[in-house]
Image 1 (cartoon, rainbow, N blue to C red):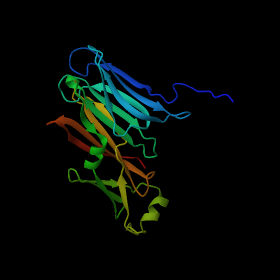
Image 2: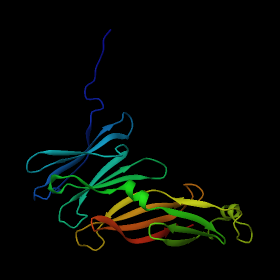
Image 3: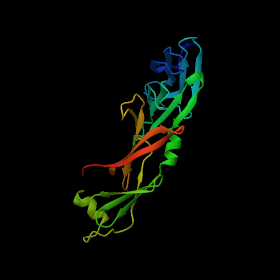
Image 4: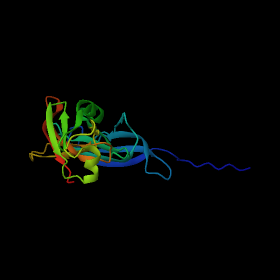
Length: 238
């Protein structure tokens, strides 16, 4: 009986690459993510950040807390205003809600520092979604104590008739929910070469496919953290 062995199976390989000065010494560095690809699937596991110092060749590796998903992507840009590129990482979960994993790291001085963790964000930015009489839905943002009202009166009659009586009164209490981060985008709003963050979270009604809109939060670096600058609720056309 003969046995055949394949070498290199399930070995980590580079899945995203970027180049820029992330340690602040003026020399471009090699920044890359490695991961273990799954046979016959785009799913990638053991995603790890590596930074190769452009001056010395030394490599610093950083393990990610959530390190499996789809289409890992790197973006380099200055988020803190120190003139040094930070490392923005996005990983899709592949779930029906479009949930994403996002991290931002600083490697200034060749020391890894986590600037943004999507788990921390999701814990901080919590919401309540409550259906009201007369075809309204209230979105309450706990973080900053703000209320928003979505008018759903233009939804199709079948949808509304399931929820409201002919007088526009709720047949029974209904609550919705706001998803965790489904998108985080670097945007230089004030064109000063320092990036802010634009965060998307879907507002859903009775179930995830019952989309009502999005909470949009803009965050900027202030006092050693990303602080809320503006908040909007974008309403879907019904």
